[in-house]
Length: 497
Image 1 (spheres, rainbow, N blue to C red):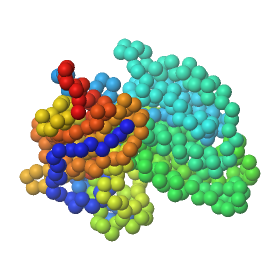
Image 2 (image 1 turned 90 degrees about the horizontal axis):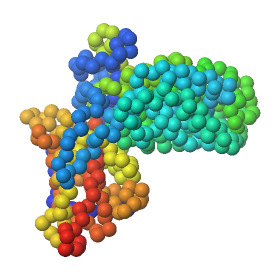
Image 3 (image 1 turned 180 degrees about the vertical axis):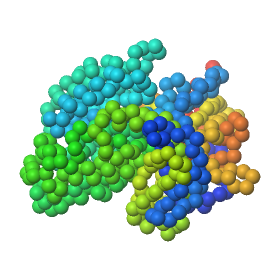
Image 4 (image 1 turned 180 degrees about the horizontal axis):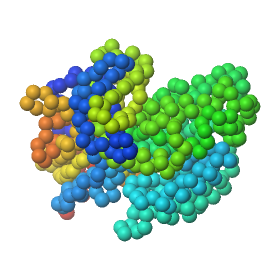
């Protein structure tokens, strides 16, 4: 159960940008000529254009995803960061559904060879996309690591062989190319939902032969041209907003006549002509471009994983606020140039300038937070939940939000931002119990202290509520955090009201 709570008191939002002013966020990776991260980039070194027009950088922040020390908490206090927190993630997605049989073994051998020789497996995970379109973890986010144990990658050959055998035991599904393409998009969206809890940039190395961006009349089954562009744009935008960058890599040359020619359900014209629906290179280039990953350019699986892991550790977040007439629902190319020699900039190549209602991203983020069994830790939070004397049956939470994790803009002698909160309550089933509705969001004042941004409320809850989750969303940074706390049991000799 997730219910709306009755709060006692109100929040306040500082001045600054108009509440309906849309901001473009860009995650930037800066590397030197050897592919190593550049960790001292400054906003003054960057030149940003949007659809050819120069933009003033509104905010700029270096994001270092090393796991900070875990604080010791006094009794009755809780935090959303602990030793199990994942500060960043690189995910390998091995695609059984969209790889040719003749290249699947070749790709698997290359992957095993790389993993067994890897010197580091910090926050590296492996998933399969099955022939049925399911995302199956081989080494997933919830896998536990025993201190001092050998790297899981040293045992990758056995893990991959076992998982492959299990996947291939499933009866192959005869999917036509239209169904397979849309099933692939849904699977990537599901993977994105799983990764949403991980802070910052998440890089997905997608080992695949790709899916078409369109189908010609021969393969569509109806004699009509089928365009997957709208679905691809929607998926790519959702992944980018969740901080997920796609790094596609293929063991065969994308665009050759062999691509997709022996996949299940690919009957019909096998000439390899683009009109037959084999523009998979365009699909992979578009999804990597919009999400800020690296385009298809290498077939070296190990090299792609190494680069993705490097890119995940240190990046920069910048934002700018185009004028209102910018939001014309067209694709806008973004170009970022670094004035410093020898620095290579990697970022999304553009975005679709769709006008949005104020708060729509915040509500969407809250829906994801509400259903996730694990707290989101991109914004650090700690606090307590106690019984209150404000009213009979009332409770009080007192939460501190890490101000350093919230994006702000200088405004005179203070800083302002856009931080909103929601208070969710859960019954015995927890987040899995279902979503009733997202309560009205509470705007927060981002002018914090050394202890962080304080958010404290007195409120009443029903007797069957077992947990309270305080969730926050930073509209400027596009980041989230949540803190779940158990409802204190009644004192001995008393009953709850």
